[in-house]
Image 1 (cartoon, rainbow, N blue to C red):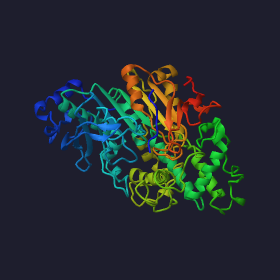
Image 2 (image 1 turned 45 degrees about the vertical axis):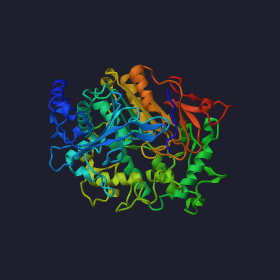
Image 3 (image 1 turned 180 degrees about the horizontal axis):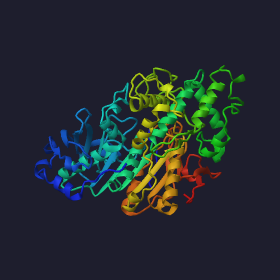
Image 4 (image 1 turned 180 degrees about the vertical axis):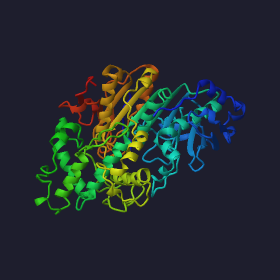
Length: 570
């Protein structure tokens, strides 16, 4: 296993014979060069879901470059658009990079949030290592799309008014983009990829699970980091948290959140046998920490009398809101997807925001940000210096554009635990957004391999949800069959895509290649590097394991830790 290091609804399938015929409709000799791809049409027959075909709209020949070790050879940068059936729906914008020295493999990247922009296909995987080449640098043909709309930064969910755009975002664009990319790859190289992989985080992690579930023979392997697989259930939890934070006096400042984090570290940091400012035994911390009785530097974290009297303490209103963040929402109504709840977050030990610059600003914006939820909802997302919590902005967009389709609707007025007349629409949306099938036999039987990893300090997608999904798969498929195709790891102290406590990067692609192509299943220790202490490594343990200090040795070396609690001893 290569090391993990720091980094600042079923669908129809196109018969193979039809795909082959479609590939032959364009003369290979005319389209083999990079320039020759300009204007090429991808026939609708080559795409396994209904479209009006696709067209290459630009090509650029790019010279070799990059900085070692992330260098790359010359490649052809292709932009294409997949035309919708509905003339009012946006096109799917996609990008494909075709290296001059192709390794005969393909990689698809997933998106993030509400999507709306094309990921950097010449860049790295989510949490990818900086000491290894990117997929393009390894010779992969890499592609991705905007999922079928261009994001409005002030209203990123507005696309959902169009049903085809909504279906594309839910998952249809994944199949359409993959098929169009394979057609262009075949035209350029004269053959299809021998291996294909998918990698994504957050929404992209949900997309990784979507392709595994719905098109189980399309990819040989997938990497799903912090996957928001039960996205509708998560949205309802976002609404519950938002309403709690919107209560009078309930929104904690950055300074108060810094005090909470410090109190949690003082109480839980040593539970793994060493004080290193990383909570490695998160389950034990969840069981023992209570903000109402916790102490910070020897003094109560709760403000005297529960009043809001200092930036170094929490009021009763703030403690109550944070407890909502830590606890599950349970649905007293049926959802068509079958989801019954969404778990709480690991609020004790997660960085929900604190004063700081650089990466810390990103962490803050993905956490509770700087402005209390209200109506109208303040701006949100990572593109604004100040704004509402990311959770709250996501909820507000979803309520106004996915559910009610009323741009002036007060999202704070919709109770996610009692949605009333909106329940039928919410239940209908759950079939699109919750990608939660637990029997992945078709993927596994086809030889597919799946790697899932999630940071325990994720403030935007709960690692408890990923653990639940993993346990569902083990229940439905059995532990033995599950272990033959799936590994799930939790990364202590790692937040959502970025962290200033314990950031991590993992050479997951090499691990996946070894498993799929050489039959070497991931075993032993994977290590993570910390931003706070350059060169610090920690083992990454199979769930439900966690890294415990052996009691001697360099506290910054993974070799000084042992994984305990893992079912398989790794």
